[in-house]
Image 1 (cartoon, one colour):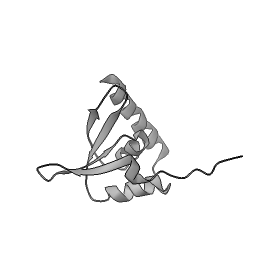
Image 2 (cartoon, one colour):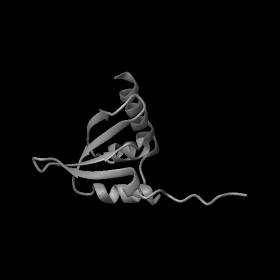
Image 3 (cartoon, helix red, strand yellow):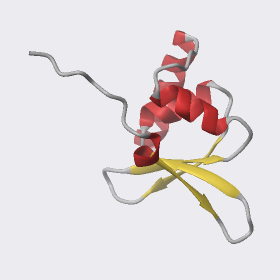
Length: 98
């Protein structure tokens, strides 16, 4: 018996927050989404470590980011495979080297 996989809601995996000075950021704990965002030329602003097991990726909100997030979760996002793989390796190196 196989289960049909459904993509998780993007609201469960990232959140939007405004800081006091009105700069907007997108936060996510999802490594795959983060690699997709970096692969599509969105800049990673910071890595926030809450504890030893979880790191939150912080992106500055800019035009088109919500569309990329929605495309990622609905399995419609297309990126170059090598770019995605290299980005994934870079993010893992940043996670485990700090």
